[in-house]
Each structure stands twice: as structure tokens, then as C-alpha cells.
Length: 370
Length: 155
Image 1 (tube, rainbow over the protein chains, first blue to last red):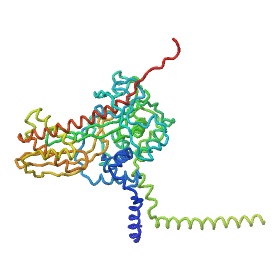
Image 2 (image 1 turned 120 degrees about the vertical axis):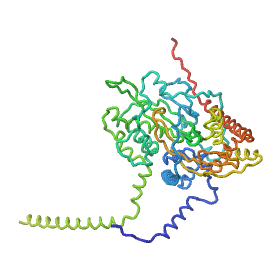
Image 3 (image 1 turned 90 degrees about the vertical axis):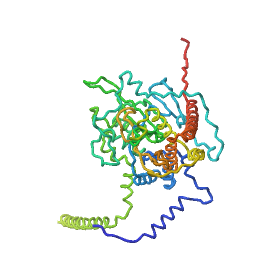
Image 4 (image 1 turned 120 degrees about the horizontal axis):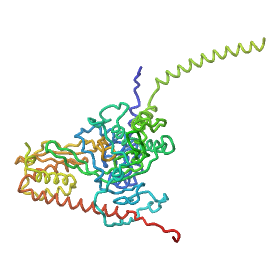
């Protein structure tokens, strides 16, 4: 039974007004602009885009500002906004082989065609706080060198040339890629739906699961075949014109994880693969995604399912941080009636318990006396 | 049938290239281009400008079958000139005015007297984008690792 309780409107209105004040903070400081958030807190913006599953840097930055930097709140706001927009169509699949590369490293081949391009990375920094960032000191322009602008082959294509790695993922002939924003999930899932869920999954959750596979809970012996970051064209077919046009570019991070061999009576031993693809620049997320993607393919490879990272329903059902925060945080909303019912129940149980133990005690005293 | 489908691949390629570069044009570039158009045509809105979403798809493993990666905001517009040409503009993001202007230029490009002005705009956008791409590629190239081997011992 629900009992409606009125009241609190004024408190709520005042709380929201107070929130707006605290969000703005000290008025003697300039307000942070959306452009500044996009330009200087870009990786926060990218995380919000990836996990909100909506590529739009300005809107993601607005969400970060509105949420006072609370990432999951920002993701929630952006997810809610996306539901207000109509969908115009499906893009052609993006071609990461023709990416405008900003960073590309491989842990498996030192001298791969195109080379190891470090790009703007935190790797090899000493993780020491930089006091020069306390003030706005001038920053040197990046060094430039002659660039080979030919497209860079994917590392998976190098191994594929020798037949030592499984092919890119194929789905059954008549398969239409599933869309979890349109139909409720029904387990077991195909790999396409799993990848969609993982691409929007919580970075921390996927990171922890990926880490668990490295520590032995579903070990897959991974190597980073390649991580690449850069821009890809988004093409949309225009039925009124009869051809596809590019709408512009988006930045994505792709990870090809190469994992231990799998052989069977039919297939010779070869490397298997996990795949990660994420909006924006997010190497950690793309790597974690590829490790979890591989772990979730356990059944396909006839591996024993013994660890959480291999349990599709567990992983996918708990990877969405908007769902997770909704259910966890709803506990703070009024549960007065539920709690009254439970309080009543525990009081009755306690009375019965006291009556019973009192009776036992009395009989015990009597026995001792006898 | 739409004239574009009959004109053969050169016309299709020209229009496709122009549309794609118009999608990359800044508001300022489009406004400068608009000032170069004389006389100003009559423009009627057919659809939009409106914002919505496109589901961006990736490929499993990079080259396999498609999966849905996530959505992106898209703005689009369709316009008709007083002389009847239909133009479409579509680009990533929420900027409906840019989409509308892109549609206007797509329509204008079909008028022989404006094609040159539109192509000048499109060429300018192409060189700007190419210069930006080159700069970024060169900055990235400077972070390329040149391995060398340390020789140890005498033999």
C-alpha cells in the first residue's frame, strides 16, 4: 500500500536554490565556461560522453558543470537528455583502419608499420604534482616532425596475414545488430549487444573486472596488440540522395587485446581476441573493455565459467552506472511506511522471543532449584 | 528521380565532397561564404533545421560485423531555393544554424551561377582542415619512438 505524504515542497525548492549557489561557489572567482571544460578537462568530458552513450562534447561539458564535477550525475543528466531527441538513423560502421591517428602503441610488435606513436600520454610521467600548474605559466608549443600520412594497418591484420589469430568477429548471417536502448536485454546476449553494453559501462566497474582476470579469476593471458586513438568519419546513408555522406568526425579509442591460443579438432591453435571501442580518449576503459569482452567469450571457446568476469548476466546487468546509482541511491528516499511495517514485525518477533526465553529462564531456575 | 542519381558518378562525387566539407565548415566560414553570394536567393525551409541522434556503429574487432557503439547528436536541414533546387545539410552537433547554411550552399551549388562561389568556400574549408590535420599528424610524428639497441660486451 502506498500512502501519499505531502510536504517538503518549500524545502526542496530551497535546497535546489542552495545547490545552484554552491555550484557557482565563490562569486569573486570567474565562472568556469563550457569551452574551458571542453578544452582543459577534456578527459572528464570524454568519460561522460562514453558512459552516457552520447557523443557531444558541449553537452557533456554542460553536464559536468551542472553536476559540479560528479561524473555519474553528469552521465545521468546526459542520458536523460538523449531520450528527448529523435533518432535520424544508423551510421555506417566507422572505419578505425582509416583513423586520423593521435596515438598508437603496440606491446606485441616493436617495429610495426607506422611505428609506435606515443601521442599525448600520461605514460612515463613521474606522477609528481606540478607546481607550475598552480599558476598559468606559458606552455611550449609541441615539437613537429615530418609525418607519414598513409593509413596505418591494424596489428590484428598483421597477425591475420600469418593465420595465427582469429578473424574479426562475425555474427550469424541474418543478424541485425541488437540495440539495448530499444529492446530490453534478454540473456544470453550476442557479442554485438555485449559490446554496446560494455562501451557505455562504468569505467571503474570494468577496470576492476579486467583486473580480476589478470589476477587469476578467468585468466586470459592478454597482450595489448594495439591501442589507437584518433578521429574517424561518421557516415550516414542519405536515402533521398542515394549515397552516404560524412557528418563529421568523432574521436574514439580502440583496443585490440590478443589472448592465448585456442585450438580444437577443427581449428589449429591461434590467438584469440578481445575488443574495446570507446567514445573519446579513454585508453583505460578501452583496455578494460577488451579484457572483459574476451572473458565473456568463455562459453564460445568452451572454457570453464568460474569467475565473475565470465558471467555475462552478472557483468552486463551491473555495468551500467546510471542504473546502479538509481537503485543504490533510491534507498535514501522516504521509506517510512516500509520501515514502519518492518519495525512492527521486529517488535512482534522480539516480544515472542522475550516471552519464550523468559519462560525458558524461569523453567531453568526451577530445574536448578529442584 | 532525383537528378543527382542520373548525372553519373562525377556529379555525385562533387556533391558528396561539397556536403562533407560543408559539414566541417565553421559558422564563420559559412557566413563569409554567404556574403559572397549575389544576388541573395529566396530560401524556403522544407525540413528543420532540427537536432536529433544518429546511432554510431562500430565493427567487432575493427573489421567484423557491426555493433551499436553509442549515439551522437546531429543537426540537419533541408531547404528549397526560389528557383526550385533542394539542398540538404547534416552535421554532427547541435548547431542548427550551421546545418541550415550547409543546406543552403548544397542547393546553391546546383545553380551554375553560384557553383563557383560555393566551390571556393568548399576548397577553403578543405585547405583549412588539411592544414589542421597536417599539424596534428606532425605533432604526433614527433612522439614516434626511434628504437636503438644497446650493444653489450665485446663479441
